[in-house]
Image 1 (tube, rainbow over the protein chains, first blue to last red):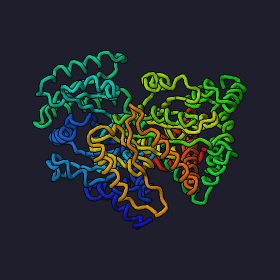
Image 2 (image 1 turned 180 degrees about the vertical axis):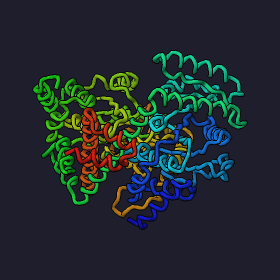
Image 3 (image 1 turned 90 degrees about the horizontal axis):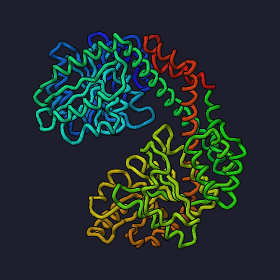
Length: 320
Length: 320
């Protein structure tokens, strides 16, 4: 159990009452490290979350994701919002600090006490992002953030996974690079609530916009459904960031008035519970195998006495 | 339940007694499609497997993986072995046939009744490759294959995953491309039992060999441990394929005499059972939520009445 449990109670109180940055950082570290106290943290935060608007930021490498996130933070601050940033790297086995060191642009906000910035590795284990990111989001939420930006670092499936965590998914694109077609292929167009064409001062920005709009217009939707807007930005100059904030807030209003916010959050919690349960079941399989059902069953399967499905049934039956 | 169950019994008999290719293909399709009959298949094959030597073939795109596999099949056939080839694409949602259509070189062996060729998608679901590939391997095994080659198509983590399925892992490299360093980074060097430098007639082949040997020599191992050999090949001309067969057989002998074969297979079965059990647990969560614990728990978490860990506990408690 490590530290005394009232330590966590104190941290939760410090987060909930004014959002002390060090307490925020400490709680997220405990979550990321899967501390035994994670249950206590989760129980302590259960009642105080659900206020923050979670915005996912995805896009291929090179589109200017971290610059765009930084510009968006600036625009949200200018609009008086408290902001949390969670940078998730599902492909990295490395935690927190090192990664953030590289994110020079974010240094613009390092001394602003209305901004919390935190990176997190999900380490590719079972339930990774689904299990740990929502916990971290609750910390930002309890600390009083109005908006939490979740940015994926790295590539791959994580983009679709992020969309499962966010209330609003912002998909970044850049001119050229056949980004429109690439995005369609990658299934990104289905998850985007808002599209941003960054580097909009470059050649081809209008072509990319036209492509994306065409794809959007070809999607079947009900008459009152949200039609994803396309926002043009030049993140390095913070151009278009205020437009993006406006669209994010419009989407939030749409989510609330349509009941979609509740539906998305219910689905998110559902995945979270399932991921936690599967992770716990796997732990129990592993612990048990210390002494040592799984080993005995494996030997029987290898010897041809039973088949692996029957072995799996035995393993499950022992769970209770 | 679809088809009558004696259909599967007949297929198993046809596979076990002479290895009729159509029955092999049909059983693997049922496994890949997760037919309800998969348990019956698994039980029917349980006693008749464990003879075939499973050889994993991995390597970055462009090293000549499919050409090398084809050359290796030729050399194994020349040595009188019956051969199965399982091409696994963990990143693809597409099944079987289409993929193989592209694998022109494999057509060399299409009319040889001592060779079974089959591709399989694992579709990225929970336990994917670990859960379904071993089942498919047992079909080849029961059909009388002496050697089964498992080749990954696509990229990524699958290489490490394949090494968990194989008795012997063959890692392919090509000259240039900084392959030695790339391989070290990707963790491939740790999983290789045999290294192949393909395209050995190109510039830089000797440099790559020297790099790989240096890395191999720097690895700590016990005095009687296997030292991975480095085989030079030109797969397009089948050069070096017979050397590779020799090294594969030498590794098999080492595995048997050292007891490592048993250890590896036990670990493989262990992962398989665990993956099947987790997949079944997830099914039960999903089914139950039809009527409808998971939904009710999600609503309670969203409302702040309980925390997600407690919800996960409830879900697990309902399993029994």
